Image (cartoon, rainbow, N blue to C red; front, side):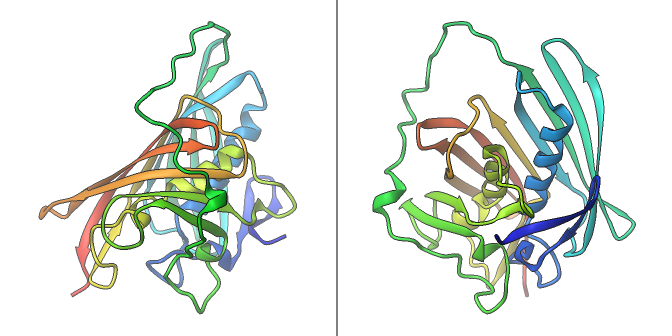
Length: 259
């Protein structure tokens, strides 16, 4: 089975070329390392009674395609809320810092879904539309099956179903949370308002909020990007699985001209 990472030792991983992103041949798309951090957080929590409600990842430096080390420490351990900090290192440098909030499940009988967000059209009846970057080289674009429920790669908002076609770590089926993190970082790519040949719009962070634990292989992003002349933008994505809305994702953007 194709995979993003091969585990070398506890917390240490070698990256494959399938992690390659759209901005550089030498650097990763932020989706795979975000999914790797989520995988390590899940293993560290090791308690199905806790639901990961928020993950914020600050990307300090571009993540190289090479050996990575993930470190995790507890910041607060309570009966109902736990907070954790994770660091991603590579080539002797700090690459990313993640902050995680986990909340204990509880039965309240209060189920109030947001009626303003119906589930987008099912991906089964939509044609596949692959990523248009680095088509001649291995990379993240090969690991995601994309189906547009609305919009397209043309500038503007888009609603897109993602299905990951590989493992995050070799030999391990990806968890639903890992699938969300791998897809959520693509909101700015599928809803871009700028020409990728003329501008870069890299996100230095990713925040995912989940009020419902995801299920199944398909994750949908209803994504909208805004930018201005300051060189700062933002992408906001409503997240779905096949049953309904599960949360939101936000990416701040650093916008720059390629000229």
